[in-house]
Length: 272
Image 1: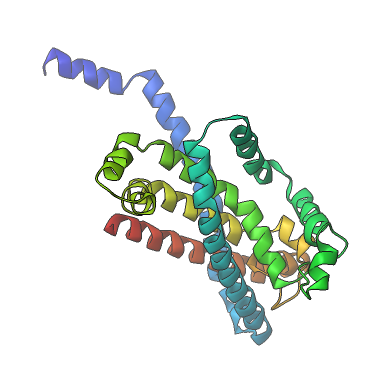
Image 2: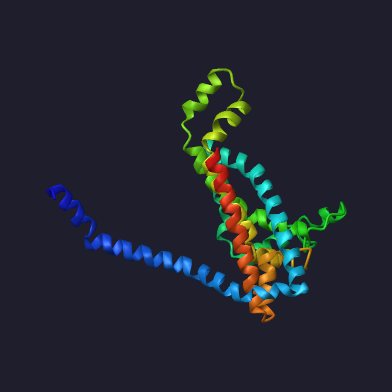
């Protein structure tokens, strides 16, 4: 063996690298053990789906979760993409203030977020009278679920999208503009494709946050089956009622749904 190869081999077995590997394995175990335990317990609890009442709760909650989270994600992308572009392209005091405000939902405790949404959109909220006047009732409705999901999920998309736009070299966009492309065509043909991976990553994070939203939803929308009871709320209700097996089964199904969505998004990203 040559001296260089010996040095590399010795370096790979150094105490630092061994410690680093050991800490990594411990971290991975801590992250995967709960999920593995949940799936293992779900195999024993699967018989709960033989109960028609449990199947009805599951169907209503799962359909509501998927529907509202997809609607919320669509709104987040439509609103968050221009916001992220503005934050990436402009510098100034106002931009810094907006940038800080975008992060607020991330640091707010879930209960505080729910109360804040009630204070804004509830019947006794700032916009309550205005919304009631036109026949719109937001609080404790399906609309409230979507609003709560947008509120908590949007910052994750905007953060990721902004990072993607910042990585784009401006001369590429300027070259397209010099060739006669309109600002919209530059954005659609140059900016979006170059930031695609960051946008997809942000969309996945936002959707996952929306799908798993619990605290703000239960405070702002309530927990009514078929109307506002999403999967996290259904799991909480079953657990609170002492029905651990049903809660475990519902949790495993929600986990499987999330994994399937992430797999599909990754395939879309790789195909393009």
